[in-house]
Image (tube, rainbow, N blue to C red; front, side):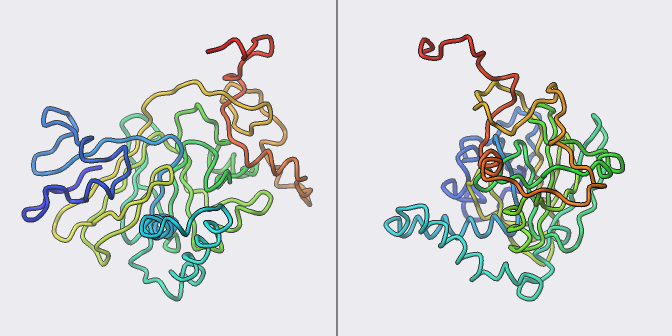
Length: 305
């Protein structure tokens, strides 16, 4: 993340405690780093699960701020969830087209570019109604939901989409219109607006109607200042490396090397789709790594340290 150094005031454009842990001030790149640009602050951080911006991050930031002020009010999961829903309502995200200006739409705030092939950036068209965008590294978001879902065979053919493998080096980019659109994820086979899959993603913010936006990585939100003069704030996401992870027998995450299962792709020609059983739904909420990362059955895990 790169932003112009302020001429006056605090040395940090964002207070260190407001940034997620991986982007704190002590993660600013050195002057010798190839990413460093004179007169700018460049932060390097990382995430495992997702990066998001817009509507969902704003609600998360409000919840995070309220919990810091009154931690005694957030002592059980039911209260937390009801407070989260209340904040989404009071901020107007259920009536976003009426209560939120178009300047808050992703397409109005940022130019989004993606890289599918090494060295070739291309601009990604973002529909004007998209108010929240999520870049997924793993097929799990907001309590285990899957915003990418299972693409139809027709979508796979026409747009070159794939199921969200955990080890393909691709980010799944998904958009949402409003809070109602987000609730679609609770329904079987629900998903957001699939925008693209890419190896790298870049957001370029220039001076506009909005002076800030909200971002979050792996659940940690912050309020991001946007340019007020002829400058650009850049957020670029790229694949770093891979690690092995353990998985439960019924995890729904898949490896690109796994044999394709009939359930991973939905045939659009089917007249109806059977409702998921409670067991299938529970499986969707669980997250793990690919089958190839599992400990073999013959290994006694009690002997592992």
